[in-house]
Length: 230
Image 1 (cartoon, rainbow, N blue to C red):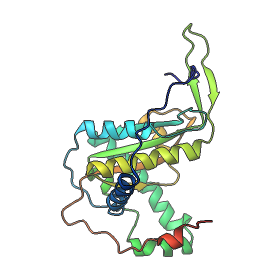
Image 2: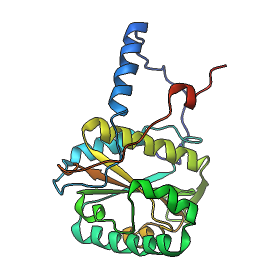
Image 3: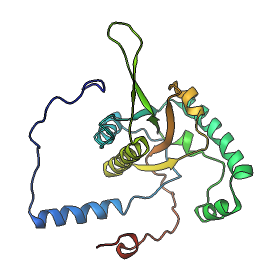
Image 4: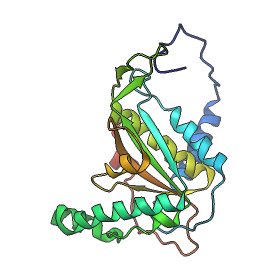
């Protein structure tokens, strides 16, 4: 269905009801899977089968969105030269960030993670997925007239949910990921030929972790710390 077409009526919900025991087991097993997800900064250049990325993107596209406007676009980058261009531009912004833009407090918060302006993963990892947020959508006129501009709603929330789906789908498939947000990221519009009304939201790095990859020792909130039940 195109964005310009409003949903026509309703259809019965396809819902598979499960027993309480099945639900508990699935919830527990999914948590066990996701708690092992870690952000990785050391990747191999081993290629990733295209269908894995395609299915993960379709999963991301199944996310809910404001007024069902689906205000996202994903650009998959596997070309070596294009990844090198992205790395060069990203590291330029990162040097500015670490050298001038970031506050002392921010740098101190990052210090335990061991990050710096160098981003070799942008060229080593086999796949980069640039996530763009569409503030509005242009619908082409079939008669050749000016396109119609449709405002999108709850764009930040919608794209955030879709990105979460994407990360979970890639982890479920057996890939490691890294969320990278050089600031500003407008260079991605030029390098990836995306229109100005699309805002770069996040650069997701995906692939197989290097055999010697290390991750920081982190503690996550307990249930009592992260949730309140009333």
